[in-house]
Image (tube, rainbow over all chains, first blue to last red):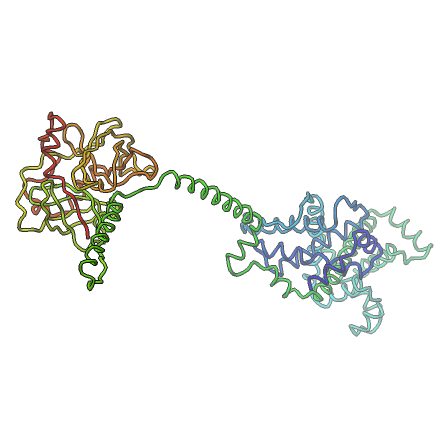
Length: 188
Length: 366
């Protein structure tokens, strides 16, 4: 398993180009390439598999967004970047949960990624805000909004799915839902 | 309300670029004229952007979760999980540190070994019981035995005599004798012999393995009580340079050895002993070490292997300790003590020896 993972490690250049071109295969390879490294780090520093998954995915998302934003300069190996980011995130989580960080067992080189992590945290806050707004919306509004804005279903599809007599009714319903969602989303 | 909904629909269509040119122009006109509409457009734009990012991130997360589900987390985790055993865990965590420490330990062990090897060559503690004499004796007895065999060849029984010798001294007038434990250790039967050559059977009544002290009791009806003990015990420790002497039995006659206290500590800093500059030989073990005033300073117990002219003597306070272990009334009234004035004080050495030689015994262990 480990070996097969290692053998499929994509080159850093390959990863960046792949992500810019929305290549699912590249993301897949990238994800599998460095997961073991982060898992080892988390498991040996007071974490479990779920922590590892959360932290690693956050790290990948940070890398992904950075590459997508076009301001990713490859100043080090991707591996080091991912490790540093995940390490930073995990240290923050540890101190938040006031678990003792004690002496962190490191497995790779580390460099400063505070800025990226903080930038991601702001972004993540917006994500969480939207998520909770949607959760507060209740059904069927939540599903209608999700289908329209996230899954890109047409009003026609939504109309059929929810059994509205015509698309105008569906549209009215959608805008009602949208108004409520915006109200929740924009409330401080 | 109805209007609001329509406005929202138009704003969204406008932002998504679904309006035709004419409608766009009309709407932009409305937007310029009505600040409320403009505000709604801006906020809806922001909202749509947020929603877009949200959707994107959500899709990414779903994708990642999908990829994650393809990984065999369990088997990976079991490889990397801190091992249940703390030893393995420590080993994994501090592999390099342990390696460094181990090599350091090996290195220091090697150097300690070599140093010790050197010192072992130079200095080894030798207990001065009369094993050399014993070898000579067994040789003698062997010769005797051969002669015996020549006379009487039927007796093929080898002489199994195995004797040790040392020195001891009286600590009470009624026959308590103090000596080194290593002289009598493992002996079947014990005898003491005084300067006049009279032997008495003794038995061991107290042993102190830590300080190498043994107390014997003469258990012989031919033994008559001694007159009062001439020497006393020195309570405080002696200073370096103090003249001391010892009387012992490295051979069948008493031998005087004289010197000085050369160190306050004994073998490799042993604080229970002095080092004294007296030439001693096997058989001197257990001999009393006295100062010029007839105070008992210690007991000869051994010597460094390769330093000539030095010996170790157990400090006198351990004699007192050993004596306390004996029931006090059994020692009798005339026992060795620290309180009385020594009878030897002020006498010449020859006179002193004359006085103490009746109180110093040869110990014979078989």
